[in-house]
Image 1 (cartoon, rainbow, N blue to C red):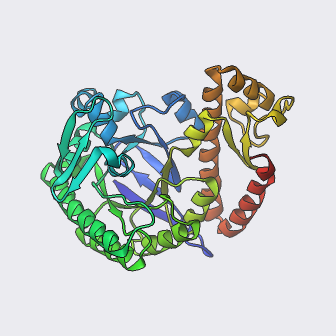
Image 2 (tube, helix red, strand yellow; image 1 turned 135 degrees about the vertical axis):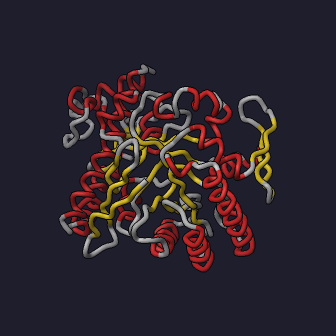
Length: 376
């Protein structure tokens, strides 16, 4: 994988770049749509391509349990297995360890967990995680890390950073031993909760180990938004300029834009697809909760500025009817719109960066997002 930093906005830290792999390329800033189990809920790969998605995220934990890494490998890797064709990235499962803490036990050697599917017991080392991702065949893979919640004591955060760094070294060594660097790229993950000294230490030691890209983890887990922005700035500022920076699990459009301003290149979150299935649609003027009664006779499109199939052909009133009637078309149309909105947002940000106008774009974007606040 190569990363070309094309331009940095003169008044902010916002960056425009290009990720190039043997499978293809993706412009940054980029939002990666989440397809946890090798599929994006309520959307087809064709829909994703038409919406402008370039990178799809899968999850190692879920694909390991079902259908199994060997089956994905036999199919030619994740992109071929799901007939995607674009770039793929796999999360190591660190967030699942955090979110399903009652089913997991963490030790220096690795993670013991019980499957949420059948209760079967599994033990995976950092080396196992790398080997599994090698079989899954994603273009970009992640080291195993420990994601922690908020609030967290300094001592607990320090121990977590030490474990994350140890696992990162082991993952990087195994990645090289298996020869995966010929076709895949590996990212280290910066942890450290909301402590500047720990974030800096973790980032600096990861850079010393040497990775193809660097992720910022352990944010958007309950901390104040000001802390999220501050830790993102600190972490991104300690990472190499010529490597891609990936903020994991963020999030709301305004948060993504704020973190692009702080030098982040890549994002992922289930928010656009999960919210769509619940009838919450993102628009250029803020969220529209289309199931609300206010839209029962609103025959305007979800977002007049959007050119997706949903907005071209259907009204808010019709979508409200579909959701209230429990029709399967509702989550499909809503998902298609939200995915398209996020991709267009990233494209608009890139254009503003290249024109050294990101600061003006950001201010106007935030102002317009507030217009629908009364309806949320």
